[in-house]
Image (tube, rainbow, N blue to C red; front, side, top):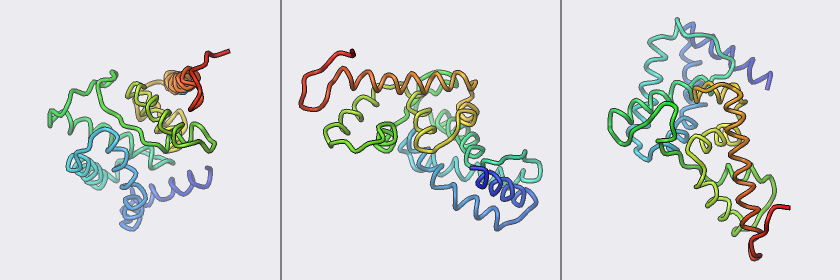
Length: 196
């Protein structure tokens, strides 16, 4: 982690000083991740691409006045999320509240896999997918950022514009809800069982 932070800090500083190779590396390392994150909110590829393009154009324009970061992905995700939400509001696809759950966030199987951390049957995978669909969008987003992207609570809280303790609680409640739902459902092929 320390090596990555040092590399990111060095890369970011080179970019801020005008190094175009640093810009290329930042783009190539992160554009796909931003795109996949955008797909969690909307399937409109044009809006996602526009938000990414707007983000990088703004970075280039303001490169000399940008602040320090030792985690480029977290920095980009924070800015990208704001730009994407603005794009979605402009397009009137749906209303997005800054603090509410009135937005769409779709999670794929990779989060379930990392939550379970064991091999499970296809039936069990299907069960986890169904359970995760009942989580609130902010819970899904926080779990995705924690377990699929691998960000620490501090960076997730910055991206989602909430305090760190609220972020921890949000993720804890989401994981607890998944576990409780699976306990109620029981193992595949067995009747539901109560928590002991």
